[in-house]
Image (tube, rainbow, N blue to C red; front, side):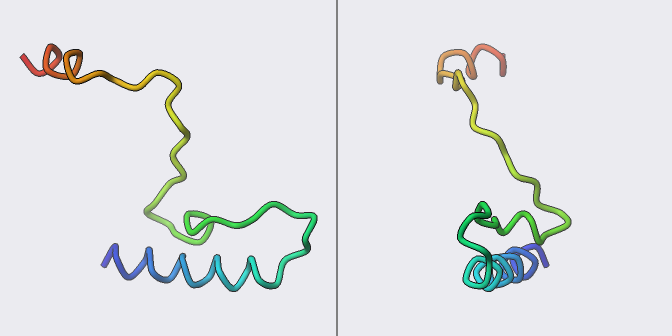
Length: 56
């Protein structure tokens, strides 16, 4: 079900980007999906050692 939603969002964003004004920012597939949210980049990623310590 989720793959279908992602595929629909991808197709919709492609069509929207082809037909948008060049001055507007591009669309993302997450702009057209309900269950997927846009994820912001993390400034300081977690190291493997930190992750292993949090699991113990």
